[in-house]
Length: 315
Length: 274
Image (cartoon, rainbow over all chains, first blue to last red; front, side, top):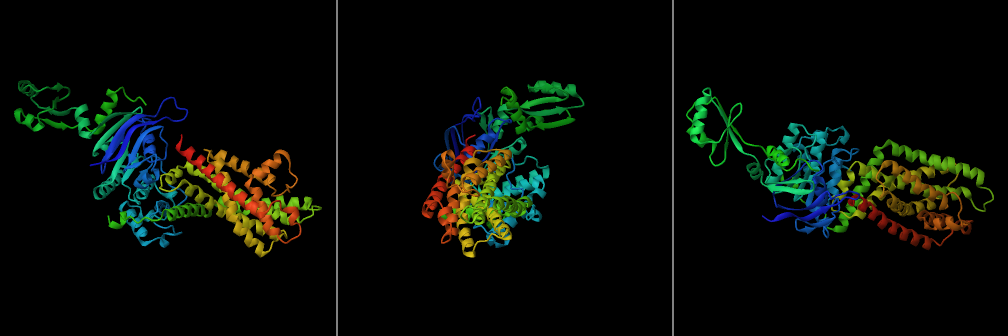
């Protein structure tokens, strides 16, 4: 797979800031990849996204998206990307449909017409179908200010996808959404990704949302701190554990010692496993177990461990 | 999900896409105009204040002994002044767009920054045209009228004047980041022009700094061009009109284009270079 985003030695120094917000970061994102760009508040995530989407000038460095150079072909890059901003960027005075129409016409998808009914049939169909999928069809012609935060976020998603971007930047897309809305949003984005191979560049504070990504990149204090798959990150930073206990704990302990398994005795017996699978370990234990749990660390556990290991939040 | 959902059908021609984007941005401002009671109220009351009160008072107290029809002179001044003032106010709403983060939506779209700025100015011109009609109505109520032919000529020139006003406003608005400052900027742009460009006071005898300032203001040439059109063939043309209409036209186009380039540069720079 070729890289759709190439970032080389990117630096951003804000005016009047003592030190750069982004300090020479480099990374690449493959075509069709689901890429999570994680980091604490103020680490440089939004700054990086703003530069990638051409709304903020970089101080130095090289950047290419879909083969276009940001210095010479910013307009071409803007054609290829869609973005959901951290702060909603809808016009609160317009209706939901007017916001979508504004976006579609701005991107040259359709010639502008003063009403929904006068717009081309293809546009009408697209909007109604997307609204149906995301459950906002009933609110489509109502003013935005009367919609809930979740519905407004869904509307932003419809808007960002209407021009079929190759790369979709999601800057904290589920901020302020309830669990049901978050889930339906991710289901829909999964559908889009599976069907059209859209590359997704995500920043989020909900680390569990990055659990299914292809690659994780952690930025801390303006520098890239870690890059790898979520599984690599979990393996490198945290151990997988088997938690067991028995009514006859002494017998269980003796058996574990005989098998030469490393263990830790807290309230229950914690056995980390590396080479052996949990099944291999369990098969060898004869004592009747009263507790059996396999603990797989989450990406959030790994992320928090990483941040702590590296001196906490330095941003 | 059907194929129609992600069906690509872009407008192929680059120029048409830019024009379509300009129309879209302008249309948004027109929709917002009708949705805002404040804008409609301003469109109705400003002509009453400017033409009815200020203009009426000046007419009653200053009109005699000038050697030309002051009422008509002042009506033209107020018409052009309303166009400039309302367009400037409309362009100032870019600051509001920036505060509500709507600017980002426009800036990430694949269109020229000139299309964004021009679309904004065209949209703002709509409110200006409404105010101009209001001013004509108030003028008619005050007994100051111009012929239908003159009215049509003014309407034909109005878009050029709005563009000029918007371009001037962009130079200042592009640098501003708060609503409070934007409101002050509208006054700082509008007031000097009203007094120095000859909207309500003849400036044929201006000298010194005031002379140079009047010559730098696009509204001076806009007013003079409109007066040249209205007064053509009428008594007082030589007293009222200062420049050849061709010179006015060249000055307006030159100043508008220069200001548009500078204003757009400031606007984009303040958005991108933080």
